[in-house]
Structure formats: C-alpha cells, structure tokens
Amino acid sequence: MNTKLLRQKILDLAIRGKLTDQRKSDGSTADLLKQIVTERVSQNSLIRKKSIVPKSIIPINKGDGPFEIPNNWEWVKLGDLSESIQYGYNAPAKECGRIKMVRISDIHDNEVKWESVPFCDIEESEIQTYQLKKDDILFARTGGTVGKSYIVNDIPEAAVYAGYLIRTRYSKNINAQFMKFFMESNLYWEQLRDGCIATAQPNCNGKTLGNMFIPLPPLEEQQRIVAKIEEAFAEIDAIEKNKELLKTHIKQTRQKILDLAIHGKLVPQDENDEPASILLEKILQEKAQSDNKKSPKRKKTDDIATSDNRPYEKITVEDAPFDIPSSWKWVKLGDVCTFLNGFAFDSKDFQKEGIPIIRISNIGKESIDLSNCVYSKDILSSNFEVIDGDLLIAMSGATTGKMGIYTNCDKAYLNQRVGNVKIKNEEVLIRGYRNIFLFSQSDRILADAYGGAQPNISSKAICEIPMPLPPLAEQKRIVDKVEELFKSLDEILLHLI
Image (cartoon, rainbow, N blue to C red):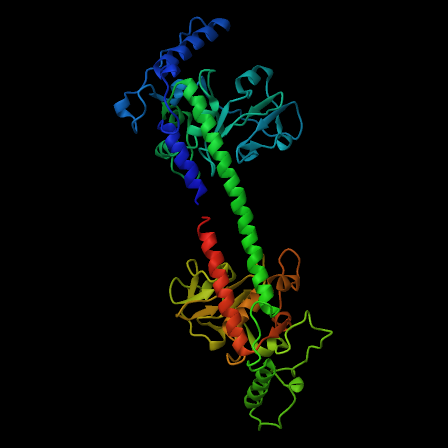
C-alpha cells in the first residue's frame, strides 16, 4: 500500500468536497466571506484604523476554478483570506537572548524543537510585526524545502521568524488547520510550481502565495473536513508504523533464514549425499595439478593442501564457531574461493563509454547497479574482469562489507577497494551457497574491519573466515529453499510499497 499516495488522495477528495457531506445548516461560503470582512472592520475600529476600510472579498467565477466544487463553496484567492502575508525578520542568530527566532532549518516534519532554536536581537517596536501566534502558518520561500509549510502550535512566550520564511495569518472564521491541509494538497503544489522562479535555489514569493486559488467551504464544513482528515491520517500513521515494524521483522527473518541455512537446520540431511570430506579431496587433486606435480599418494582429508600459500588447516571442534551436521566439513573461505582485488584505475582514465568499471558506489542492496558507472577502453588482465554471478565486496569506506551479485552477461572491470570472491570449483562449492554464506557473514566482515570512521577490510581477513561446507547435493537443496522463502518475503514487501 502506497500510503503517500493515499494521503494525497484523501486531501484531493477533501478540497473537492467529496470527503464530507454538505449541510444546509452550514450556510454558504458567500456569507462567510461577508463575516470575515465585517470582522476586519471591527478590528480596525479597535486599533483606530478607521481610515483603512477593508475591501470586500470577491469570489472567483466558479467556471474559472481548476475543478468543480459544491454549490455552497466558493473559489477565492489565498491572499484575500489571509489577514497578512508577512516576510520574516532578517537578523543574525544568537546563542542566547530574550526572543527566539525560528528558521527554515529548525522545522522538521512539521515540528520545531524550540529548545534548539536560536535567539535574535530585535527592536521592541518590531516585535509585534514578527511575533508568532498560535495557528500562524509559516511558508518556506527558498531552498530545498521551498513551499513546505508549518502551522504554529506550541510556542515560547516570545518568538519571531526569520527572513526566508513567510507568515500567513487567518481570522477566527477560517480554520487554520484546513488551510494547512490545503498547503499539502496537489492543487497547492501545482500552483506553487507554476509560480516559482526556477534557479539553482528555487524560490517563491508572497505574490505567488497570495494569488493561489483555494476552494473554500463554510466554516462548519472546514471543521468536519479537518476532523475527517485527521481521523484518516491517524489510521495511515498506524499502517505506516506497522509497515515499518513488518519491514524490520522481514529483515530479521531473512537473516534468520541465512543463519539456519549455514547451521544445517534449514533442510533435512540425506544419508545418500556424498559427504563434504569427498569435496575436500577434489581440492587436493586440483592443487596437485596446478603445481604440475605428479599425483601424490592419497592423503587424509586433514592434510589436504587447498591454498596457493598454505596447506589445508583443519578447524578443530574446539575452534569451530558452532556445531554442524556430521556430513559437513569446516573449511576456510580461502580454501574454496579465490579473492581478487580490483585494478587501481586513475580517475582521469574514466571514459563515458566502453567496459563498465564497478566501484564501491555501484554496490547496491545485494546487487550491482550500473546506472551511474564509469567506463574503461583499455583491455586489462582477466584477473580484473567481473562476469555474471560474481560476488563483490566493498573493502573500505562507509559501506565496508556491503556485498552485491553481478548479474549481467556483459563483462565489467573491478575498481580498487572492491573485492571479487570467485569460486575455485563449482563441483565443490556452488554460487548460491557461497552467496548465502557470505551474506550471513556481513556483520562478521564489518567487525573484522579496521580504521575507525572509514573502516577497511583485508582480503586475508575474508579468506580466513571459517565456512561450514555441506555436501554438494545439500548445498543445492539449501539454495532452493532459501530462494523459495526469500521470494515469499519479497512478495510481502512488494505489497507494502
């Protein structure tokens, strides 16, 4: 369920008069507009502004509105509804003082953490002009948050707002929360985009805001609409909270499935499977052939040489991280895989076309994303080639330990700080089980990293990771089961979007 789209749909229905029923007892917006003008006349009298006569609010012809609205509603301009559209106060922020000054950067998710809002020096005569009151609505007029709005609820005794904000204020005959919901609707954003100045730092002004068309219901229906939206949004909040909780559970479930798989507890063992000890003997034979030696007398599995630099080192029961089935064997990752480091490309050699170069930034969530990669035209050694099915690991930086599978028929090259874990013999270890094991070790790999804020992991450390090796037939059953379970979890996630 796309809850963001659902919120927009609710707002869209609300401002079209389709979320609540219309009632004759509500009267009409035309009468409401007269009440607003009368209220302004009264306020001017109280503050002795008799010479300033508030002008009548003339509704916009309904045929000129963006869409059809109920008969007792009116299209009006936001500037005619607002008592004022006031730019903020320009002053340096101070660590201490008497008057708080809220800035764009202090507003997050329609909330202000007033304890961290700075102060400003402001003349006493200016305070009344810029002082915030409950139900004021602030509007960001520039920067990355241009158009975002904030309705003032809890405020300190004295607070003003900074220059990159605009304040709108409404009479008691307008529900401020209704206006805030309008400022979250698609109609509002469409009009805002049309009126914004498109620059590197887009900005909008009070004129753009004041000229916006708004569909206005009678006050009683405004209140019912607000109540209905708040009720619907509360239910969506609960859905989103449960959705995030479910996502967390799914992530934990995936990790648990991997954990069960490498412990030999995900699928049953079959006594007819050729045991993993036979797989280790195949490693011995390959080692002998690679050294161009005559086949030695058959050695015990414990003495098998499985590395270019060292003999096979048996992992004793005492050293084993956990118990495994009797048909399995403990090896080190370097006994069954070769670790290849990337080529030290110089950034000046990067091309716009050619053979893709996979960098740390291309490693996504268990996958490789080539949408933003660079290329090489040079022909390099096959040691730096990446082919379909290779597993790549980020070796340094903020994403150390992040892994992805390359699934592409076209070859690519590996950049430095990215490692490639290649299988020596797929008659001993299949790709799917290698992937399952390494994805299960992501925390372990990160824990073995060194270097603080920008950790690094060595190829030697990865090759030393103890690996439980099942019989080949069981590896295949494990991979099939994991894929089946992960597919079910992915389908659940797909319906959460």
